[in-house]
Image: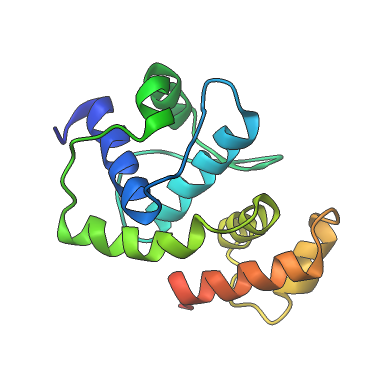
Length: 156
């Protein structure tokens, strides 16, 4: 089941299930879980998966209306990471890298997605820049995001 809406969300769920089998995402009832899912998929796309989601910058980070439609339409399977999709080699490679991303706190995940969205991950001033635009994030959250980002995405 690769094509269409179900195919896209199925790939996402398979990657997340591989990365953290006990991960729970209540997209229907939890705003925080919806934010996390948006950021996870944004990072997956940046890791080289072309899932076909378009992201724009919103106040709370990258946001894809298409992804929102997919997870609202499939909220029950998203919540339990129900999928029969078998990962390709490329998807498994992304899932391996996502193992560290899914362990980030909400603040660290926000910092990482913002760094990647802005193209600042490998800038010398990344800590200062994110701290300026996201003053609610701690220096430790931003440092952790930079470390995880460099280990998973690398510097170009």
